[in-house]
Image (cartoon, rainbow, N blue to C red; front, side, top):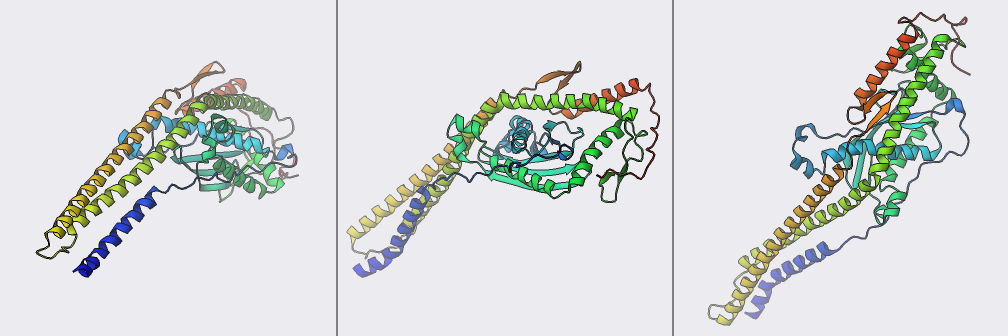
Length: 427
């Protein structure tokens, strides 16, 4: 009988050992190691002025799912908070701008309105943005219509070293590796072009701006091929009065673009500290929530297994052995009680996870107060630079058109073509 009891108890011992192993495994915390740091490649020699390309970074697309945009609970489950995401669309481009500027590889780098005419344009969509993870889809094109980077995904986990202190957070963004990778890919695309290609980009930018104001005056200067690439096939004559007037208009336009860029810079300065703290604490809350959920699953599963094992334990006592039966009954009861306690512990952990999620939402609510729209004065006009910046800038461009027509008397005469129309913009 003793041998029989030992044989019957063996599966229970294996089950208990497996349960203990699962608990111990669940309790192991992985050591967090600092991420290898990726920096933008620095310029080692001076770039000729004619090849120094200006970069315009558009406000990132917030990418709030249309089907749940009005459902705060559904958005919170995806860790999306509308006001925070809209703020990020204007804040994150500034981090990329700072990265590109620090490399010394580019001309003027600005955060620009969508319709601004720039040599190289960067557009991005936010896929995921939490304190723990960042994922962007990026497209980079030049003024000639060439695609440098096409809908490429850049993603990375937060470098937790940046969250250790306020000073560390100011020195390096937790997702600096993501911005550095974008900058290095842009540099690789630029280096793949010839010097003549880079000069052509700058010429086409100027002529496209002129074409927007005086299409008759620059007719025949630009040509677009079947691939959608626009090239300059001829250049204006030296001292062309129309182009000189366009140049003055463009200076005014760049002044507004600079003002828009300074708005974004001021916005970043204002919310940088609170947003950094938001991301740091949200990363901690996300980590706690994930651990609580994992612990809840483990405890609930083990508790249920214990209850099941106590119910299904085989009868190992002989009919007349009451002592054995009492011990067996007590073991079953203890197993059931312990299993129920495990299940209840798991339920409590789920409640704890919910508390962390609510704390994260409260953090987002607090952050919303820091990102109120800002209004600036430009050329006597008031621009409200929020989600409607595109419309505001279009109004400004319409005003520039008005100014140009007033300066030209409401009509534009075709500028005489250069004596040698076969001259192409190559050096």
